[in-house]
Image (cartoon, rainbow, N blue to C red):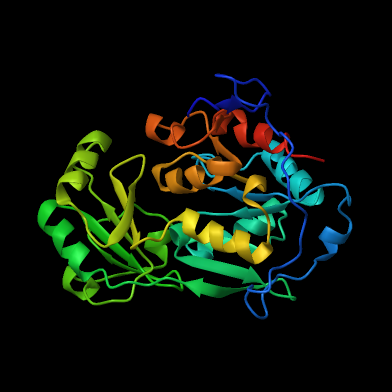
Length: 317
């Protein structure tokens, strides 16, 4: 974090402003450019929000931020998320997860978000009148070139290619999880020439630092990528990140940049945290690695300490 670094308990360092400083702008409805048939209209929960509360756009990462590593979302976090939405703020998920792994979490959290960002920004969903979600923006790419580069550089790596429906084509040995359950195991060559929203690469033979060096030496071109906590590489279409998707949503909702807040803990959150920190609040979870901490302008407690709840509780009421 830079000289304007601040902490969710309200303390500041380096002369930074206190958390929750008032931001300018007016609360507005859906922008004219919002998707036709999307969830840009006023929902019942919005009508009950206090008129004096200026609406913030709040983007929440899932794993390591909203949800603990063991899959638990605590009651403290759920209550904080619901209270923020009830106060009139637009609270949404912005995750690397697929659509099918994300939508059930909205019900679990009690959220009625107008938009949801999945696949690290490659997929944006909008809420319909019946409560379902439909895809309103999809970014796709041909992963052939990048797959061939990585395949030649990482022996024994496993590859997964995800399409816009969340279906995975898998090559190699993946851990047993939702991706594997909904995936189809195929020869590596069958991954080439597909239309992908995301590519996942796992290399069990490398620790995180070694993996970072290998990825850097590969010099991947024409794609956006991030490295996870373990030897896990997420690859998105060129120029596509959580930040690009969130900026599009912000424009649709016509919320000023000064009233955006993003919370995350991983390297796939770096661009989103920088985006939020420019004029608003980029909240980094306490367990995040240093390069992620540097991308934000606020630091909260770790996921095991309900750090997200502490940050959400500082939003205007």
